[in-house]
Image (cartoon, rainbow, N blue to C red; front, top):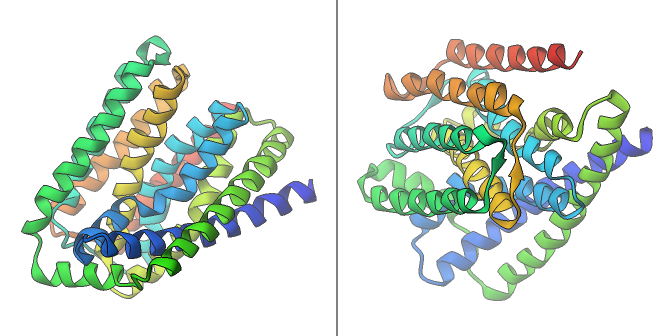
Length: 316
Protein backbone atom coordinates (compact mmCIF):
# COMPACT_ATOMS: atom_id res chain seq x y z
CA UNK A 1 0.00 0.00 0.00
CA UNK A 2 2.88 2.36 0.80
CA UNK A 3 4.24 1.68 -2.69
CA UNK A 4 0.92 2.69 -4.25
CA UNK A 5 0.88 5.95 -2.30
CA UNK A 6 4.47 6.55 -3.39
CA UNK A 7 3.60 6.10 -7.06
CA UNK A 8 0.52 8.29 -6.66
CA UNK A 9 2.46 11.13 -4.99
CA UNK A 10 5.34 10.92 -7.47
CA UNK A 11 2.86 10.98 -10.34
CA UNK A 12 1.23 14.13 -9.00
CA UNK A 13 4.61 15.88 -8.77
CA UNK A 14 5.53 14.87 -12.33
CA UNK A 15 2.13 16.05 -13.62
CA UNK A 16 2.57 19.43 -11.96
CA UNK A 17 6.05 19.87 -13.45
CA UNK A 18 4.93 18.65 -16.86
CA UNK A 19 1.90 20.94 -16.88
CA UNK A 20 4.08 23.96 -16.10
CA UNK A 21 6.57 23.05 -18.82
CA UNK A 22 3.98 22.50 -21.54
CA UNK A 23 2.16 25.76 -20.71
CA UNK A 24 5.38 27.74 -21.09
CA UNK A 25 6.27 25.89 -24.29
CA UNK A 26 2.80 26.41 -25.78
CA UNK A 27 2.89 30.11 -24.97
CA UNK A 28 6.34 30.55 -26.52
CA UNK A 29 5.46 28.64 -29.69
CA UNK A 30 2.12 30.40 -30.10
CA UNK A 31 3.79 33.79 -29.91
CA UNK A 32 6.55 32.70 -32.29
CA UNK A 33 3.85 31.66 -34.79
CA UNK A 34 2.28 35.11 -34.63
CA UNK A 35 -0.25 34.98 -31.78
CA UNK A 36 -0.30 38.06 -29.58
CA UNK A 37 0.81 37.63 -25.96
CA UNK A 38 -2.76 38.52 -24.92
CA UNK A 39 -4.38 35.78 -27.04
CA UNK A 40 -1.76 33.23 -25.97
CA UNK A 41 -2.26 34.16 -22.33
CA UNK A 42 -6.04 34.06 -22.58
CA UNK A 43 -5.98 30.53 -24.02
CA UNK A 44 -3.48 29.35 -21.42
CA UNK A 45 -5.52 30.79 -18.57
CA UNK A 46 -8.70 29.19 -19.86
CA UNK A 47 -7.45 25.76 -20.87
CA UNK A 48 -3.76 25.29 -20.06
CA UNK A 49 -4.21 23.86 -16.57
CA UNK A 50 -6.39 21.02 -17.89
CA UNK A 51 -3.46 19.25 -19.57
CA UNK A 52 -2.39 17.15 -16.52
CA UNK A 53 -5.99 15.90 -16.12
CA UNK A 54 -6.10 15.19 -19.86
CA UNK A 55 -2.92 13.12 -19.55
CA UNK A 56 -4.36 11.11 -16.65
CA UNK A 57 -7.64 10.49 -18.46
CA UNK A 58 -5.88 9.51 -21.68
CA UNK A 59 -3.77 7.02 -19.74
CA UNK A 60 -6.80 5.64 -17.90
CA UNK A 61 -8.75 5.24 -21.14
CA UNK A 62 -5.72 3.63 -22.81
CA UNK A 63 -5.46 0.93 -20.13
CA UNK A 64 -9.20 0.28 -20.30
CA UNK A 65 -10.36 2.24 -17.25
CA UNK A 66 -12.84 4.62 -18.86
CA UNK A 67 -14.78 4.79 -15.59
CA UNK A 68 -11.77 6.23 -13.73
CA UNK A 69 -11.28 8.78 -16.53
CA UNK A 70 -14.96 9.78 -16.45
CA UNK A 71 -14.92 10.11 -12.68
CA UNK A 72 -11.82 12.29 -12.81
CA UNK A 73 -13.24 14.55 -15.54
CA UNK A 74 -16.52 15.23 -13.76
CA UNK A 75 -15.04 15.18 -10.24
CA UNK A 76 -12.41 17.72 -11.29
CA UNK A 77 -15.17 20.18 -12.14
CA UNK A 78 -16.68 19.98 -8.67
CA UNK A 79 -13.18 20.22 -7.16
CA UNK A 80 -12.39 23.26 -9.33
CA UNK A 81 -15.54 25.18 -8.46
CA UNK A 82 -15.79 24.19 -4.81
CA UNK A 83 -12.36 23.39 -3.41
CA UNK A 84 -9.93 25.38 -5.59
CA UNK A 85 -11.99 28.55 -5.81
CA UNK A 86 -13.14 28.25 -2.20
CA UNK A 87 -9.61 27.92 -0.81
CA UNK A 88 -8.33 30.77 -3.01
CA UNK A 89 -11.10 33.12 -1.83
CA UNK A 90 -10.42 32.21 1.81
CA UNK A 91 -6.77 33.17 1.34
CA UNK A 92 -7.72 36.51 -0.24
CA UNK A 93 -10.91 37.86 -1.87
CA UNK A 94 -10.88 37.04 -5.59
CA UNK A 95 -11.44 40.15 -7.73
CA UNK A 96 -12.61 39.26 -11.25
CA UNK A 97 -12.34 41.83 -14.05
CA UNK A 98 -12.22 39.47 -17.05
CA UNK A 99 -15.64 40.04 -18.62
CA UNK A 100 -15.72 36.87 -20.69
CA UNK A 101 -15.79 34.62 -17.62
CA UNK A 102 -19.50 35.08 -16.81
CA UNK A 103 -20.62 33.96 -20.30
CA UNK A 104 -18.17 31.04 -20.12
CA UNK A 105 -19.78 30.04 -16.83
CA UNK A 106 -23.15 29.96 -18.59
CA UNK A 107 -21.63 27.80 -21.33
CA UNK A 108 -20.32 25.47 -18.62
CA UNK A 109 -23.82 25.06 -17.20
CA UNK A 110 -25.24 24.39 -20.69
CA UNK A 111 -22.49 21.85 -21.44
CA UNK A 112 -23.19 20.04 -18.17
CA UNK A 113 -26.93 20.04 -18.91
CA UNK A 114 -26.25 18.69 -22.42
CA UNK A 115 -24.21 15.84 -20.95
CA UNK A 116 -27.08 15.01 -18.57
CA UNK A 117 -29.50 14.86 -21.52
CA UNK A 118 -27.08 12.75 -23.57
CA UNK A 119 -26.69 10.36 -20.65
CA UNK A 120 -30.39 9.75 -20.00
CA UNK A 121 -30.18 6.52 -22.00
CA UNK A 122 -27.04 5.47 -20.12
CA UNK A 123 -24.63 6.04 -23.01
CA UNK A 124 -22.96 9.06 -24.60
CA UNK A 125 -22.70 8.08 -28.27
CA UNK A 126 -19.94 8.96 -30.71
CA UNK A 127 -22.22 11.50 -32.36
CA UNK A 128 -22.98 13.11 -29.00
CA UNK A 129 -19.27 13.13 -28.20
CA UNK A 130 -18.70 14.92 -31.50
CA UNK A 131 -21.32 17.49 -30.53
CA UNK A 132 -19.44 18.16 -27.27
CA UNK A 133 -16.17 18.62 -29.20
CA UNK A 134 -17.89 21.05 -31.59
CA UNK A 135 -19.16 22.86 -28.51
CA UNK A 136 -15.55 23.38 -27.44
CA UNK A 137 -14.67 24.82 -30.85
CA UNK A 138 -17.65 27.19 -30.57
CA UNK A 139 -16.56 28.20 -27.06
CA UNK A 140 -13.05 28.89 -28.35
CA UNK A 141 -14.38 31.09 -31.16
CA UNK A 142 -16.61 32.94 -28.69
CA UNK A 143 -13.70 33.48 -26.30
CA UNK A 144 -11.48 34.95 -29.00
CA UNK A 145 -14.30 37.11 -30.40
CA UNK A 146 -14.97 38.64 -26.98
CA UNK A 147 -11.29 39.18 -26.19
CA UNK A 148 -11.10 42.63 -27.74
CA UNK A 149 -13.67 43.98 -25.26
CA UNK A 150 -11.47 43.46 -22.22
CA UNK A 151 -10.07 46.41 -20.29
CA UNK A 152 -6.53 47.61 -20.97
CA UNK A 153 -5.42 46.73 -17.43
CA UNK A 154 -6.75 43.18 -17.82
CA UNK A 155 -5.06 42.78 -21.20
CA UNK A 156 -1.76 43.96 -19.75
CA UNK A 157 -2.01 41.52 -16.85
CA UNK A 158 -2.67 38.60 -19.20
CA UNK A 159 0.13 39.62 -21.56
CA UNK A 160 2.53 39.69 -18.60
CA UNK A 161 1.40 36.22 -17.58
CA UNK A 162 2.04 34.82 -21.08
CA UNK A 163 5.39 36.51 -21.64
CA UNK A 164 8.14 33.93 -22.10
CA UNK A 165 10.99 33.07 -24.43
CA UNK A 166 9.98 32.49 -28.07
CA UNK A 167 13.25 30.73 -28.99
CA UNK A 168 12.23 27.71 -31.06
CA UNK A 169 14.67 25.11 -29.67
CA UNK A 170 13.87 26.08 -26.07
CA UNK A 171 10.14 25.64 -26.53
CA UNK A 172 10.56 22.37 -28.41
CA UNK A 173 12.69 21.18 -25.50
CA UNK A 174 9.96 22.28 -23.09
CA UNK A 175 7.45 20.17 -25.05
CA UNK A 176 9.75 17.15 -25.05
CA UNK A 177 10.34 17.39 -21.30
CA UNK A 178 6.61 17.97 -20.68
CA UNK A 179 5.66 14.94 -22.78
CA UNK A 180 7.92 12.68 -20.71
CA UNK A 181 6.78 14.16 -17.39
CA UNK A 182 3.07 13.96 -18.28
CA UNK A 183 3.42 10.41 -19.62
CA UNK A 184 5.10 9.01 -16.53
CA UNK A 185 3.09 11.22 -14.17
CA UNK A 186 -0.20 9.96 -15.63
CA UNK A 187 1.09 6.38 -15.59
CA UNK A 188 2.09 6.52 -11.93
CA UNK A 189 -1.12 8.28 -10.84
CA UNK A 190 -3.37 5.74 -12.56
CA UNK A 191 -1.25 2.84 -11.27
CA UNK A 192 -1.21 4.08 -7.68
CA UNK A 193 -4.83 5.29 -7.64
CA UNK A 194 -6.16 1.94 -8.85
CA UNK A 195 -4.54 0.16 -5.89
CA UNK A 196 -5.60 2.85 -3.39
CA UNK A 197 -9.18 2.84 -4.66
CA UNK A 198 -9.40 -0.95 -4.46
CA UNK A 199 -7.97 -0.88 -0.92
CA UNK A 200 -10.64 1.63 0.13
CA UNK A 201 -13.41 -0.35 -1.54
CA UNK A 202 -13.98 2.28 -4.23
CA UNK A 203 -15.07 1.48 -7.76
CA UNK A 204 -12.87 2.88 -10.57
CA UNK A 205 -15.56 5.51 -11.10
CA UNK A 206 -15.41 6.76 -7.50
CA UNK A 207 -11.62 6.47 -7.47
CA UNK A 208 -11.51 8.97 -10.33
CA UNK A 209 -14.24 11.07 -8.77
CA UNK A 210 -12.60 11.53 -5.35
CA UNK A 211 -8.89 10.74 -4.77
CA UNK A 212 -7.72 11.28 -8.35
CA UNK A 213 -9.77 14.44 -8.96
CA UNK A 214 -8.70 15.95 -5.64
CA UNK A 215 -5.08 14.80 -5.97
CA UNK A 216 -4.54 16.18 -9.46
CA UNK A 217 -6.05 19.49 -8.34
CA UNK A 218 -3.61 20.01 -5.44
CA UNK A 219 -0.94 21.88 -7.49
CA UNK A 220 -3.63 24.09 -8.97
CA UNK A 221 -5.09 24.79 -5.52
CA UNK A 222 -1.67 25.95 -4.30
CA UNK A 223 -1.16 28.10 -7.40
CA UNK A 224 -4.66 29.58 -7.05
CA UNK A 225 -4.03 30.49 -3.41
CA UNK A 226 -0.79 32.28 -4.33
CA UNK A 227 -2.45 34.06 -7.27
CA UNK A 228 -5.30 35.21 -5.02
CA UNK A 229 -2.79 36.58 -2.52
CA UNK A 230 -1.12 38.54 -5.36
CA UNK A 231 -4.48 39.97 -6.45
CA UNK A 232 -4.64 37.94 -9.68
CA UNK A 233 -8.28 36.99 -9.42
CA UNK A 234 -8.74 36.75 -13.19
CA UNK A 235 -6.11 34.01 -13.30
CA UNK A 236 -7.81 32.06 -10.53
CA UNK A 237 -11.36 32.24 -11.90
CA UNK A 238 -10.19 31.81 -15.50
CA UNK A 239 -8.28 28.63 -14.69
CA UNK A 240 -11.23 27.19 -12.76
CA UNK A 241 -13.94 27.92 -15.34
CA UNK A 242 -11.85 27.19 -18.43
CA UNK A 243 -10.53 23.92 -17.03
CA UNK A 244 -14.04 22.78 -16.12
CA UNK A 245 -15.32 23.57 -19.63
CA UNK A 246 -12.36 21.72 -21.17
CA UNK A 247 -12.99 18.66 -18.99
CA UNK A 248 -16.58 18.30 -20.16
CA UNK A 249 -16.28 19.24 -23.81
CA UNK A 250 -12.84 17.90 -24.75
CA UNK A 251 -12.06 15.15 -22.25
CA UNK A 252 -15.53 13.59 -21.95
CA UNK A 253 -16.47 14.52 -25.52
CA UNK A 254 -13.22 13.08 -26.86
CA UNK A 255 -13.64 9.79 -24.97
CA UNK A 256 -17.20 9.43 -26.27
CA UNK A 257 -16.23 10.33 -29.85
CA UNK A 258 -13.50 7.66 -29.74
CA UNK A 259 -15.72 5.00 -28.18
CA UNK A 260 -19.35 5.18 -26.90
CA UNK A 261 -19.12 6.14 -23.23
CA UNK A 262 -21.29 4.51 -20.56
CA UNK A 263 -22.66 7.18 -18.22
CA UNK A 264 -23.83 5.74 -14.87
CA UNK A 265 -27.26 6.71 -13.62
CA UNK A 266 -25.69 8.24 -10.51
CA UNK A 267 -23.89 10.80 -12.67
CA UNK A 268 -27.15 11.87 -14.26
CA UNK A 269 -28.89 12.07 -10.86
CA UNK A 270 -26.12 13.38 -8.58
CA UNK A 271 -22.63 14.28 -9.84
CA UNK A 272 -23.56 16.32 -12.91
CA UNK A 273 -26.45 18.14 -11.16
CA UNK A 274 -23.99 18.91 -8.33
CA UNK A 275 -21.66 20.51 -10.87
CA UNK A 276 -24.54 22.66 -12.16
CA UNK A 277 -25.45 23.61 -8.58
CA UNK A 278 -21.92 24.97 -8.06
CA UNK A 279 -22.26 27.01 -11.25
CA UNK A 280 -25.59 28.45 -10.05
CA UNK A 281 -23.99 29.42 -6.72
CA UNK A 282 -20.95 30.98 -8.40
CA UNK A 283 -22.74 32.92 -11.15
CA UNK A 284 -24.30 35.66 -8.99
CA UNK A 285 -20.93 36.11 -7.25
CA UNK A 286 -19.29 36.95 -10.57
CA UNK A 287 -22.23 39.00 -11.88
CA UNK A 288 -22.73 40.99 -8.69
CA UNK A 289 -19.76 42.91 -7.34
CA UNK A 290 -17.28 40.93 -9.49
CA UNK A 291 -15.67 39.72 -6.29
CA UNK A 292 -15.66 36.40 -4.48
CA UNK A 293 -15.34 37.30 -0.82
CA UNK A 294 -13.95 35.16 1.98
CA UNK A 295 -17.49 34.43 3.13
CA UNK A 296 -18.49 33.32 -0.36
CA UNK A 297 -15.31 31.24 -0.57
CA UNK A 298 -16.32 29.61 2.70
CA UNK A 299 -19.73 28.80 1.21
CA UNK A 300 -18.13 27.16 -1.83
CA UNK A 301 -15.75 25.16 0.37
CA UNK A 302 -18.53 24.08 2.74
CA UNK A 303 -20.63 22.97 -0.24
CA UNK A 304 -17.69 20.95 -1.54
CA UNK A 305 -17.15 19.24 1.83
CA UNK A 306 -20.88 18.48 1.94
CA UNK A 307 -20.67 16.90 -1.50
CA UNK A 308 -17.72 14.69 -0.46
CA UNK A 309 -19.54 13.61 2.72
CA UNK A 310 -22.63 12.74 0.66
CA UNK A 311 -20.59 10.68 -1.81
CA UNK A 312 -18.94 8.75 1.04
CA UNK A 313 -22.28 8.25 2.81
CA UNK A 314 -23.85 6.85 -0.35
CA UNK A 315 -20.88 4.54 -0.74
CA UNK A 316 -21.44 3.16 2.75
